[in-house]
Amino acid sequence: MQNLPLNVLDNGPIVPKKPPVDPASLVHRDLLSGPFWQRIPAYASVDEATFLDHNWQAKNTITKASKLLDALQGLVSPEFYRDVEEGFTKAPMSVRVSPYLLSLIDWSAPYEDPLRIQFIPAASRLIPNHPKLTLDSLHEQEDAPVPGLTHRYADKALFLPLDTCPVYCRFCTRSYAVGVDTEEVEKVSLKANEARWKQAFAYIASRPELEDIVISGGDAYQLRAQQLEEIGNALLDMPNVRRMRFASKGPAVMPMKLITDDAWFDALSRIVERGRKLHKEVVLHTHFNHPNEITEITKRAMDKLMERGITVRNQTVLQRGVNDSPETMTLLVKRLGHVNVHPYYVYLHDLVHGVEDLRTSLDTALFIEKHVRGSTAGFNTPMFVVDAPGGGGKRDAHSYEYYNRETGISVYTAPSVKQGQYFLYFDPLHQLSTVIQRRWQDPVDAERMVTAALENARAYLR
Image (tube, rainbow, N blue to C red):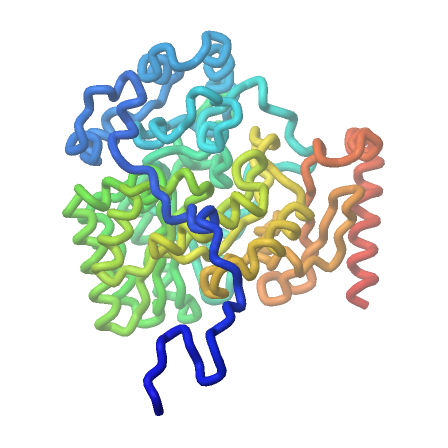
């Protein structure tokens, strides 16, 4: 056959099926780089080597409103500072923000910034909790056979070895235990304690059906290298354990630990490698919520994990004003794929004390999922889920038995988790009509709406 130019076939030139790509569609590859942290007055003279030192990041983490003001030094108005100062006192979650995270916030528009919204509370933006909210809305403690171990699913358990994190998220579903006591919440204590750990290990070993263990907290990032390896090896030694996931917000809020904490990184690598030799899966689960959280530093950290053959999956929380648009969520998903992080779940925001301003409706999740799907490969497309209040576990957001968009009540079942039970999720009141909001304020009327939703769900299943 005659050799032809690449753009020519026997019957003439190739006609492109698609127009040339818009460069704007490749914006997910544009990662923030350079000494961006020097825009913050407190870090103006900090060089790269210092900024990338995980110990320096931990030492200079912001935990008080006064420290925040010292770091920003005139970047915010006195009114905003007073708003945040009051927000610190009203937050059910402890406040802890790394210099890296602080440097990613646009302080010229702090009220609108998606990272500020997630981590630094402003009192003026807070709204009342939903009437159906409880502190431990997922009933993790009710499904805990021993302290710090939740056994809800047939073959999976959640192990909480400690109760601290590199930063604290306002929206944390575990605000009942994570961090120190606040003026709003007295925490359940889950301090790092080897005696408690051994109790959890004994339970896991005694249950042959447990094949999948999630090590969370708190945050696995906060475990010392030796502790990380001890936990990993103890679980790998159990014949029944086939899969293990270390869960950490760390890669999103302090990626430099993966670059400069060689002891921790090597400990994780050894556990993964030993698991591979035993034909067991050990992976890292992390938590990016907005594309602005992914920088060139993130890519360096993820590249290092990739070189060690460590799989990284991501779990996002859908939040109002943060990622509740198809454009933002699509950019996040594609940027995660660009740095070799697999988008795994997008959670509808749990009913968490003190952060009703962050919740969205189920309808919002369904709308966004429809637009995200098809924007990239299926294996890099997250599943949108509702972690059913009351302990029903993660349900595909579309799998409700009944959803009333007017009252904001959706009903789910979980046949393989808790057979015969019904689990209700409640849309935030501020996204419902004023008539329905008034009905929710009347306990009797609220109960009528709940009863009606349950009756409709039962009728659908009959």
